[in-house]
Amino acid sequence: MKASFTNYEELTSDLYISDYTNFKGEASTRGVDIAKSVLDIHKEWPPLHIHNPYGISIFVANMERNPSVNKKNDGKQCKQCECLCISEQSEIDDRPWFALVELKCCKDAKRNIESNLQSAITKLKEHHTHLRDIKNIIREGDYHYYWIISIPTSYDPPFKSFIWTEDYLTDISEKYDGATIIGDNDILVVDGSEIKGLHK
Image (cartoon, rainbow, N blue to C red; front, side):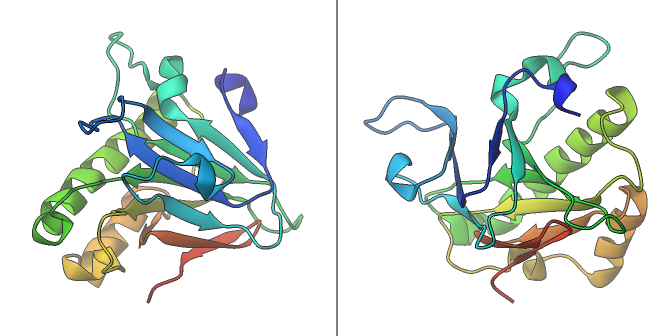
């Protein structure tokens, strides 16, 4: 896995993730920020917070800084998420977790929450498929797969409850190696095999 990435970190702290790729305010465009402290994140947008109270070791790769991983066979870039996170396996008899993280920041997030979610799910589908079928980085059964969708400018998680039925979520899971969608701005690392959203 690590050999596929030229730029990554391994952290045992909480994670704060923000995306300023389309930021047009007074600060310069910064792209994706991944930090161990909220003090290191620009204050314009609140970040996604991954709570890691037990100090689980997490491999974190900023996908903007790993362009070769996102390159398709025709040389073009696939639609990629902000980052991916992979836990260190906590028990021999269970799989580690693998999370693709997609952030959607919007000044009018409440009005646009459905379109943000649909855009995020399209990107997650393409990126998961690319990592599995083109790059052979992931395979069914290797991990517990999670797709995290965060809308940090909205305070109404869990977001997925707004538009997706249980049938839809089951279909995603069957087509994408058991992937579970978490729509939240606060994620709890339960252990090396499980994560969950903190808002029900």
